[in-house]
Amino acid sequence: MATPLPFQIAKIIDQECRAASNLLQLLKRESVALSQRNIDELANIIEQKSQELVTLDQAGKQRHALLTQQKLPADDKHWRLLLSRCRDEKLLQLWQSLEQNIKRCKMENETNGKLLARSQRVLDRLTAVLKGQSADTSLYNQKGNHNAGKRTLTYAQA
Image (tube, rainbow, N blue to C red; front, side, top):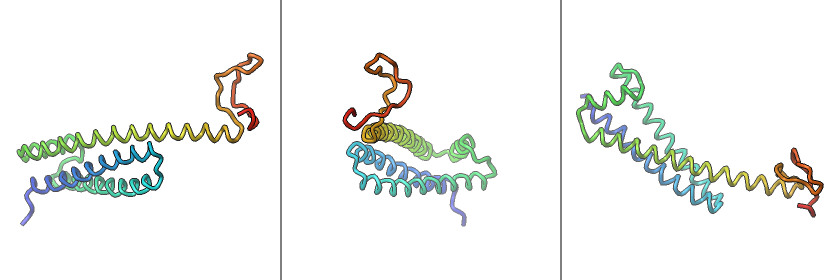
C-alpha cells in the first residue's frame, strides 16, 4: 500500500526543518568562531554545515521527485499548489516555518560572510605592511603629491 501524499510531504518538510534548524545553529556558532578566529572550531563547523546542506539538497530532490510523480512542474508555485491540495493546515505551517528558518540562515550566512571579508581585509593589510607595501592610495606624500597606486615602504617606514 502506498504512503499517503500528506505523510510523504510531511516527512520531507520535517527533514528540511531539522536540517535548517541545525544549519542555523551552526551558522551562529560559526559567527562566534569567526570573531574569535578559532580555526579548529571553524573547520569542524564547515564539515557539519556540509552535512546539513547535503540533507537539504536530498530533501529538495525528494520534493522534485514528488512533484514529478504528481505530474507537476518542479517549481515553488506547484509545490505550494501540492501543499494546498492536501488541505492540511499543519503542513502549511510547517512549510512556512521552514521558509522562515531558511531566511534566518541566509541572513546569518551573509553576516558571517561580512565578518570573513573584514578579517580577510585586515589580514591583507597586515601582510602588505609586513611586505613593505601600503595599499593606502588616498594619502598624500611629504611633497604634497597624491599617490596613485601602491607604494613600497621599507620596514622602518611601515
